[in-house]
Length: 375
Length: 235
Image (cartoon, rainbow over all chains, first blue to last red; front, side, top):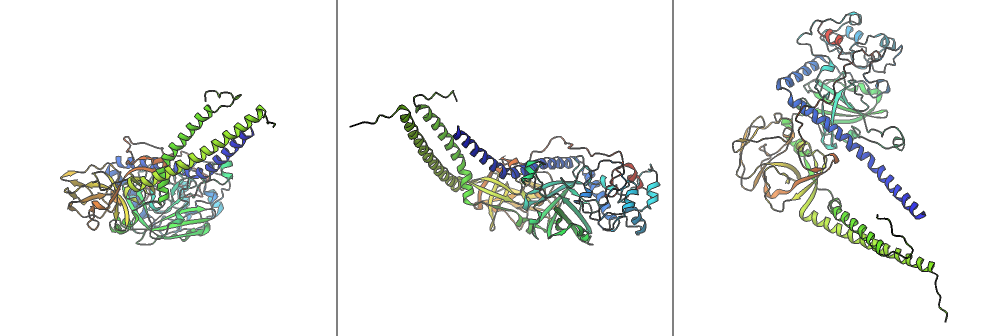
């Protein structure tokens, strides 16, 4: 009996150890599998669209981008911003984050062609509480004063032809996915979404509103943020420090010169990493548009630090050297080959040994030993 | 002379001890033999028949994702056939690409990425996406003897025989043919392009909030409610 318990204990120990090692890997694989399904659905959706519809979506997004002339990056990872897009009654004092835009008043003061509030403008708390549940960044050609916006009844007049639709309608497809982010070097392939579209930056990769839409173009700067390495679900597994999906947690490993790819509708955009750095959460407003440049910044959170990776667009047609260099197949070390190709034989061997043991056990029964029930 | 007559219990105990010892020896020997056998087979298979390859890069998406571990069958001088995914030496590195055309074929690459082989349009159902982004010039290639015309499945992100500075690939440089994916786990199995979905799946409908969110005034949300959209039309 004691021997049996000892064996059981040993087995449990081995199983626990293996589980501890494999859990993060397997959960990451599972999450990637789920993401792949979303990606495939998106690609199928896009392919099924009319070419003219795709064109329309992209050009609407381009018009939207033209209407921006500064980007505003909020620290979406901070706790105040976690609320998903669930309608709630306005509370007395919703805590506004430090870097919140005050859209209406700012817009009124800003020159008419800049509907974007300048970045990093702190919003007074009272104003936030009083502000109507309005689109804080109306992508409109004409700015409106706060009172106007608040009092204006929803007019039924159709939007003018040229006005780009509101942010949430941009790059809209059936699948809800906005586009796909691929980082070949890290094996990352993730769909990204509109922020607050039922998606939180804590579990999905999202495009940040207030930055250019990911359709490229000179003078655009698109910021895509995603969670870092996800902890295991609440409970014991998390308490012992296990992680699950890795998400964007590894982007700090990128170095200048690496490539990443955005796929939006049928447009494929290639970016080359120019800069990798990390900042503390309250200096995010460094991100700016650069005229004539096409920039995408990837962002992830590691506690109070924000890991940023900035890539500059390179035309695919001019990037053949880079793409060629990125394409490498390497043969893993010999021992891995030997283990993998030898393991079937080993498996068969263990089975044979097991059978032999059973046979021997049966034939060498001592007097007084009962025949084990047919097992 | 007195002979010690052991009790039955003692005899049994001794017999059990002997049996245990025999078992331990047997197991140890078995383990050693099978480990050795496994290692030898593994080494032989690796040297003669198969090799693993760790594939990086976007060119073979969605057939072989970047970061995949692939089992490749060594060619050992066999001529690859059309459609094979070949592992070949390219400069100092190795690459994996799909064989599009064999020696003697006449390949025409149009500016829009369409490939014709001997006048027939190549059916490309490997991937989604288009090749229009690539800067290939229209080109006509007669694949020379003992050469292969290869291309990546993700045409728009692949640099391959369609480019004049890449050219065709000599058959001798082909090392192996990719057959099985073992990593990532969710792609475990025979190398195959991602299955295209026939119907268009709608994964999730966008939740269109009917009530304007109050607590989110401080957030950069713009809900697709009617009010902001229509205000947009005001000039």
